[in-house]
Length: 375
Image (cartoon, helix red, strand yellow):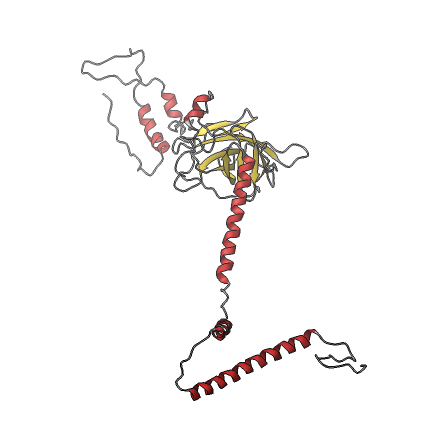
């Protein structure tokens, strides 16, 4: 029988290595049993304690014994978790992240054109749209550019932008549900967030070539904005983020996208409508600010009075008079008034003639019945 030994164990504040150093001398004192079979039981049902290598116990405690192995879940190229509502505001960051688009005009033959007035890209289905990336200083190694599509309106922003079922069934690619694709690069990777189910595509950032200051990324949109079961005429935004290899966002740019059959025509129409809306609001404000002209009531009254007086002069009235003498008296008064009217009219006519027929200097105007001095 093994003698019972009293051990003074330290309190729980000590480390496990100190506890092990206290216990190992007592354990090493246990008698060693050699050449014992694997299952050697005593008659009383107890089993002999086998200490096969007591030197390893005495040498010391390995502190790395109970450490967990490193997390193997972190692998290269894993999509970082995205937010439920993506941010759509521009953020150039410390590297001056900017985007630039080629000037294509509004001709009907163009396959891709960008409106700076509306900050909107117009492109055809599955046609390449070059996007130029400009930076203010050099990026760290392993930086990537991520493209994500979201709906513009608040009532649709929680939904995931996907291709319509018709275009998905026609495509045999593994990422056939993704709306945005990167062309011309075999290193493009397509992700789908496990929590929000939002889809994105990344491409490694390539520094500008010698003699250039831009890096071009070729994007293509694989569904029309009017497709039923897909966007269904709902406007979308494309978010381009500049990220590190670990998924840290260094910069962000956002612009609206419309995928249609005739980009040049649609851009021209929407720009004209936008200018009309702006000019229309300004005109209405000016009209409201200027008071309406007040009509001159005095002139109106004068014109009405003169016209009514002329109409009354032309009217003829019949007056019934009793008695001859009274009739003769009223008739003389009426005749006198008629003579006064005739004289006033003749005087006005003569004054008009004198104004327009003025004789030359040194000559006098002859009236009817008069003779000149020479006669």
